[in-house]
Structure formats: C-alpha cells, structure tokens
Length: 171
Image (cartoon, rainbow, N blue to C red; front, top):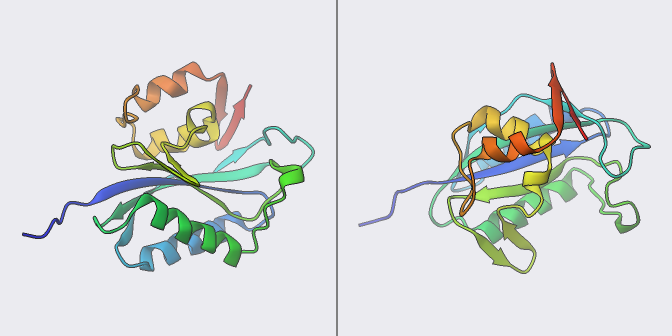
C-alpha cells in the first residue's frame, strides 16, 4: 500500500526591495506548481523593522504552509527554494548578511521532526528569536508545537514585541 500521508512544511518569505506582495504571490504560485507540493495556507503580509542592519527599508514578511507528498525531503524542498530565490535575483552578500534583499525564502519546519544535514536544519535554528516569523506563523497555525519544544505561542510570548496593525516591532 502506498503512503498517502502528507507532510506539512512551513516556510517564511521576506524582502524589502519593493513589490513584495507580487513577488511572494508569484513565488507561492510557482511552489504550488511543483510536483508533490501544494500551498495549503498563507498568512497576511506584515511590515517589520530591519533587524541587525537598520539603515534600509522595512521588510515585508509572510509565512506559508506547504502540503508535501512523502517523496519530498527537507533538503530537496530547500534546494528548490534556493533556486527560486536566485530566479528572483537574490544575491547573498556575506558582507551585509542582514541587508536589503529580494525574496528570501527560509524553511522553518518540515513535519513534526527535526532534521539536520549540511545546509539544512529544521526547525530553523533562529525562528524562535524572530517575531517576524512567529507572528505570521501563529496566524496560520495557532496550535502548533515545535518538535521537541513548546507551543509556538509560548515562544512568541517570551519575545519582546508589539504588533500594531500589520507592523511588527521587536526589541
């Protein structure tokens, strides 16, 4: 018998070079067309102040849930996401790691498991430190627990942050 059980992966999208709503919609439409992947949910768009490099425009952030067939792997999904970033013109600048960017796509969670291999770590190692990830993730998955950890809402409750309309302030 074939395994038809779907795996839910959560991803984040972020950028601040202009046109994020359109780019995010296009990125999610492309992902939805990938074999074995369907976009199951998406959060609203949130404006967030830059973290670590304040001399730049505010970011727009969003989180999406992807329903994946069992043949999709964390490494395979992340590789596709990185190729998509490149197609959107993303260039990684190590000298300005937190600088301006076209769509930045991060794999946050892949099912209820932890996974670590070269270049791939889920849960994302810094997601619980980022209100711009946790706020939209709580919007689409309010009862979510992190593998081996606490409820998502508990992590968010420990972060100093404020949400005003669609703006997230952290710090």
